[in-house]
Image 1 (cartoon, rainbow, N blue to C red):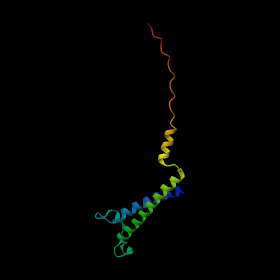
Image 2: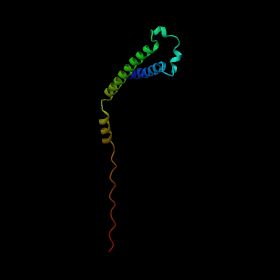
Image 3: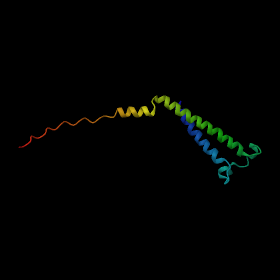
Length: 107
């Protein structure tokens, strides 16, 4: 399940990147390559459609991110804090060095 969501996450990231770059801005950006398809999207042109599309894809992206976090946590079944505690308890302790006998005192 998580592998499907992870692949979807990459696809959504690419789609939202392209959607943002295709929107019109004050400096036109890549929106100049959209051509004369403005009549297809209505009187406002592609600006309204692309804004709505970007918003919807952004919501799906956030939902997918939350789902990925949930499913990864369910697979691991240990929180990060518990994992750190387990790792600290598994750290081997160095054995004590044997005591070296002291030399006898000379009088």
